[in-house]
Length: 228
Ligand code: ADP
Ligand code: ADP
Image 1 (spheres, protein in one colour):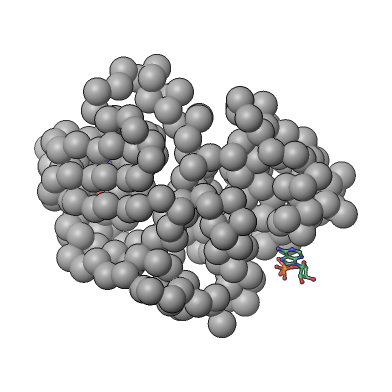
Image 2 (tube, rainbow, N blue to C red):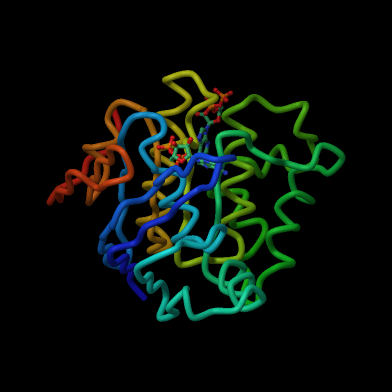
């Protein structure tokens, strides 16, 4: 069920210009780990996350996730793969404004074959007492916790987080990182996180650094600690 990325390249065509967003990127992620993806803006972090999660296609190389070789899948199969195995968290929480907390999380549940329990999920992210509130009535940190519950309730093997703390103040950002670490420990969910937050390196089992579409550094932490 691990993630294996082998020599993956991706080109974006932008008018006349070709942008090499990934250059022969290779990466292995064992199950049940937290991986931090660091690197400057434009270095290919989101592209890497998107090809692993089946949001985007790539041009060369091979990716195997949860036993599926992604370049071999048709579009409909890739959509099915994504629904079944991957949960996504973004900087903007993408909650539906006309639905309550519980109804937003229900959206994630309906897409799943073996969803987790609603109450358990909302308790775990600390939002059970606000289940009838609407997104506009919540702080940023609270909205992100709802988004995490929505991604998690379908019990995915992988949680792919693209700057989940990017719109939050530092203190709240740390709480969200702690929650993601807690999710990894409690459910064994593999968590890939793109973030600029200080302390991310220490909380991850594995850290990779990207530059100009390449993975230029990768190292492992034996004893990840909670963000301070
Ligand atoms: P990061 O997440 O590290 O900021 P991205 O993966 O978003 O980097 O982008 C990598 C490179 O690909 C950048 O040069 C970016 O401008 C380019 N890029 C990303 N998405 C597109 C797109 N849809 N069309 C054209 N170029 C893109
Ligand atoms: P914000 O800063 O966005 O309002 P916080 O993350 O500071 O949100 O949390 C608001 C309240 O919820 C605090 O009292 C905090 O202790 C509590 N809280 C935060 N995370 C959790 C969690 N995972 N489980 C239970 N309660 C939490």
